[in-house]
Length: 116
Length: 110
Image 1 (cartoon, chains in turn purple, blue):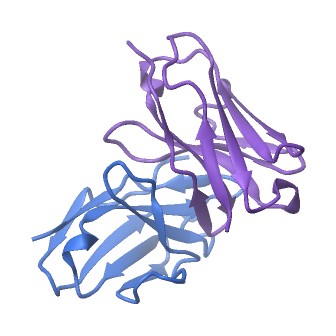
Image 2: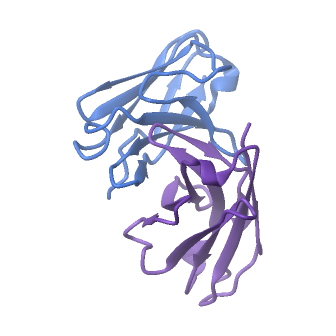
Image 3: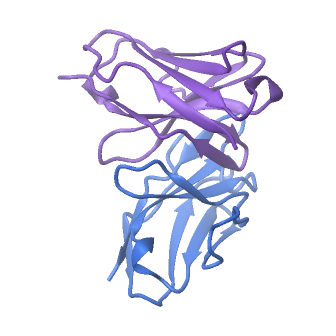
């Protein structure tokens, strides 16, 4: 059974870059599927950020596209998120996930706070 | 890419049935049979309850069912139980390897 685990700083200063990594176990990223990031501001709903295919092709939410980079390291079986120029509005729980057309398998999530 | 529309809240008494709607467009819900539903307790990650519109993962009670008509998908929970009280989110594939979520529905069991 696939497991995903997010890691990274829990506090990022305004205007800096948020960086998170998702370690995948129980499945090889190279075998397929899309791997991505979803966030949830405190008390709010879910927002798809973007995803990457094992080949390296990336797909981003248009509202975040100018600030987001998702990359994959198949040798470490992990993928990463970078979000630049963060503000307090980027405070959220960030989930990494395996995405199939019809369902999503989630990591446990990690809270990232950007102070105002 | 606009969020799918869900009611902010629904409620029902134990044993009753409730239905949560999820309305999108022909570019997402109406265009693909790839709607999924997630249950989320406070402080927890979402849990898959329905995938591919109406399929149940192993371990999910058959009290949970999904359907779709046109641009609107629905999650029905029958025989409501106290531990069904949670937030529920719909999600649809929206083409070009993108996904879109609903705003979430808070289910209260009275």
